[in-house]
Length: 102
Image (cartoon, rainbow, N blue to C red):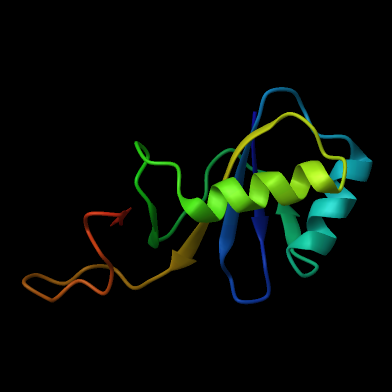
């Protein structure tokens, strides 16, 4: 299952779980992400920069460890996505294409 949280900076945190999250887990995650809101949808519209699908980021590894430390089990991966503007032709990228993708 995949859950999305949106924080005050409009960043999205996507969480992949083995099982579902309980309401207590969601409350803890909201606190962990600075009172981020759970976005109850299966798809987020817009342009975002985030880690490549093939590579689990160090941010994810640390975030999952923190979740385990606050007794949230069953999280396989967490990644953060930052909103950006639509790409323009021949414009320089504002991210590292080796590590991130649009």
